[in-house]
Every structure is written in structure tokens, then in C-alpha cells.
Image (cartoon, rainbow, N blue to C red; front, side, top):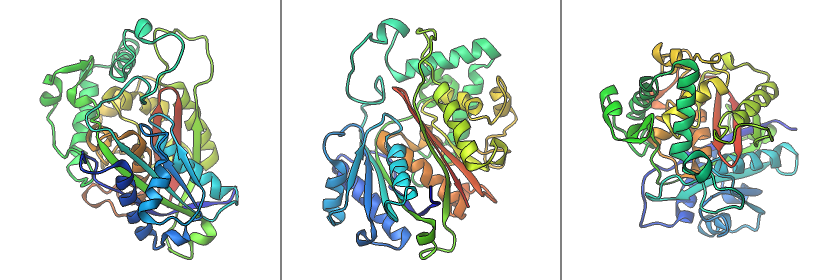
Length: 380
């Protein structure tokens, strides 16, 4: 594989845009990424587009109708919550393989207030419904149960999860792209109505509309456009391996652990080498679980990390300096690319008042139950 670099990134402010269509949101983000990279559509050789809820609507081609139909190949991707980051990986693989030198990856989604459904998507499948096995096929229940299991095993408390929400909402006040920029006290979070115990309302991500984009190039070509290309040191995609596990508890851990192991080996780093992480905090319980899944701490130590402030900006390993999905929002197809954008801005020193000082290595993680997990490691 050739070295691949990110040259341009962008995202629009996540929120609700009922007056626009999803391809218009994607087009806006794409044009901003092209401008950031200093290129035009004439320079792009392949486009990958991630969108989940209109997966059959040829969203990538519709975006090109807005920004320039140059006849390039377009790959449309749908992969649960990992849709956008899978599109990014397809762009990465296209360049790393040597087939192309420049690529545009766009993630977009228009969800409004529809909320998170069973598998992070609108379609249904065959087989036994999880409703009759775990009590609910909805994501709040799945991640609530996973958090409760961590409490049972390690003595984690609801307050630990609430502290994660407090941290992320505090981080968000410095992120102009976040859907909500509102600081919350521990009491605000703990006393909010319960959605799926132990997660209260402010421990759950909002859905909405959004788009993000990235321009990738071979490292050789990237150096023609910038003196500080951001290297994609690893881009990994995994799914759940079969196991004879207890079907009453969905596995929200294994595919992330497998992806993390592969990503660290590919990038030639250890978890301690990371300067920041943007992970899939769809619920506060998910963030805490992923501390251990990503190797940021040992088994059962995630609660201690929260208590000691290790994952706040200024701590040992800042997690979700953007405010995370809990504040930034989670328009499914856009999330994976948006997480990558955030890491790139920190590595460039362009994150403003939320900047992680001296950041040189960052990780972006997304998990989609169904199942898919992407991890992208970026280096300055």
C-alpha cells in the first residue's frame, strides 16, 4: 500500500435542515473540503459517498450534480453507523492501491428527529427479532444493558457515565459545528429523565442532519499541495466474528477490540502514543466501554479514568474534544467523516479553544451494530 494523506477536510454544523435535501448538505461539505485542499472537482479522480437512510438513492451522483459532473467513478456506501467512515476507507484504499491519486469522500445524512433504530438503519432483516431476546431492538436499550453489565462486573456507577456526558457537553461549547453547545452539570445529567437505564436523556446522542467531507491524495501528490499533509497511518474495517456467546447480551465490544489491535499494528503504535481520540459515544455507556476496547486503560479501569479526569482536554488522553456525538449530534452517514475531520484539525493546530496542544497522533473510531467498526489513525 502507498502512503495516503488527507489534504482537505470540512463539515457543516450538525443540526436540522428541513429546507434542504441530503445531497445539498453533502455538496456544501464537499465544496468546503475541496477549497480547504486547494483543488477543484477537475482534480478528483474518484468519489465515495456514505449515506444510510437514502442508500438506494444514488446520493453520490446527486452531490456531483451540484458540484461538477466530471464522469468519475462514484461508490455509494451504506454500513450502519460506520457508513461515512467506510466511505472514507474506500477512498483510502483506492489511493493506497495505486489505482488513483486523488479522492473525495463525503458522508451525509438527513434524519431530523427520527432517532436511532435497531441496527442504525431503516431496513429490516430476517431471523429472530432482538425484541424477544434482549427486551428491545432499539439502540438505547442495547447500550443501556451493556453499561449495566459493566456495572455488574466492575462496580461502575451511573455517576461515572454521567461524568462522561458532563465532560463532552463542556467540550462542545468550543465547537461551532456541534448541534448543541450547552454545558451541563452533573445534577442536570443525573436528574434528567431516564431513556434506558443507566442512560438519561443527556447521556444519549441527538440525531439530526449533517455532512462532512475529506480530500485524500497519495503522499507524493499531497506534497504538491501542502507542506503539512496528514498521513493516514491505518484505516481498518472489521465485523463481528461468529461466537457461541450469550444471545441475551449483544456484543458491543469484540469488533472494536479486533479493529484496534489491527490498527495499532498497522500504524506501528501503541495506545499510549495517541494524543486524542474521537470515538463512537452514541451513549455515555458506549464511551466508557470503548476506553477499554481501544486499550486506553485496563479492564475495569474506565471508571477510574473518568474520576481522575484523564479523558478531558488537558488530561492524559483527551477523548471527544469535539463534544462527541453526545453534543455534536449523530447524523449516521456523516459521523465517521466528521470524527476524522476533528482529528485532522487538532493535528493541524486548527481546533481553536478546544485544541489539544501538541497533538501529533489521533484516532477516529465508529461502530455500527449489525455489525461494522472502523478505526482510522492519523499522524502529523
